[in-house]
Image (tube, rainbow, N blue to C red; front, top):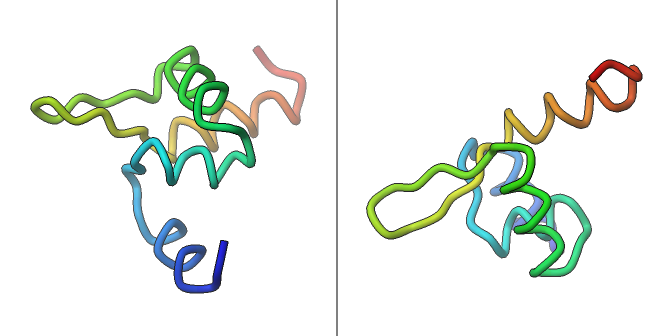
Length: 67
């Protein structure tokens, strides 16, 4: 990930599948599967995007040990 991509991802709320995988540091299949499993998937027409705020909230709760 270069600096332009990092800045781009940090300023967005909805991420594409490629961006969410880069953000999480996971491969394509595992990253999308994880994002769907925590309820961050947002469908806009036929597109599937992933809400970064939901992902961040989930990870924050996991770090604190809260379910």
